[in-house]
Image (tube, rainbow, N blue to C red; front, side, top):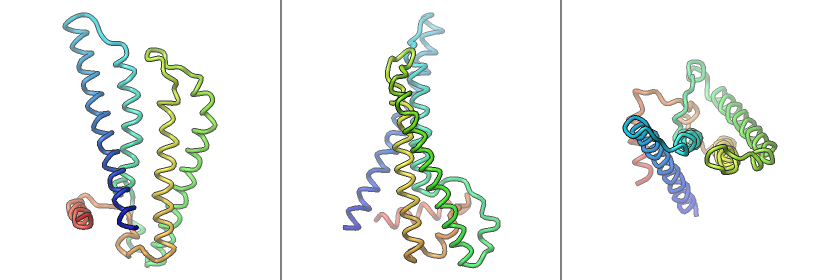
Amino acid sequence: MQKTIDQAVHWFFKFLELLVVICMVAMVIMVFGNVVLRYAFNSGISVSDEMSRYFFVWLTYIGAMVAMHEGGHLGVDTLIKHLPVLGKKICLFLSEALMLFCNGLFFLGTWKMHELQVTNISPVVGISMIWIYGIGYVVAVVMAIINLNVLYRLCTGQISDEELVQVIETEGLADVEKQMQGSKA
């Protein structure tokens, strides 16, 4: 059962990585195409400006979910790495609980703005703005699940001492990638 869940999570985040690539490629094509059209043919596609902005919003949030899953967000471990194991556990618990609280606020804020965004129509494309800002629901839920998973593993003693400091130094990034490849095999 656990292997099936791990595979589903793996493929979900692979799908998110694919969405990031699609958004990036679409943005490049739209912006570059619009520049060429404006300078070479004195015309342009007005939809491309607006859609490239919307893709950038989605790309940013989807990338944040992927980075959180991979532990790639920035952090400062100057104090944490010098604490005893109990201190590291307390700090990890506090940081995950605060992130969970922020994700709850993000979800609540998106929910409270939902009605306004549904009726707000984008000026050029003509779609409801909830299609752009609704990513807040997805991000808040996915990141909250990641936070809850870490908190569960911490409270049940399933987190190793190395995982208590969740900052990856750039020198050790290659080692982490090797470990991730080894755990997926």
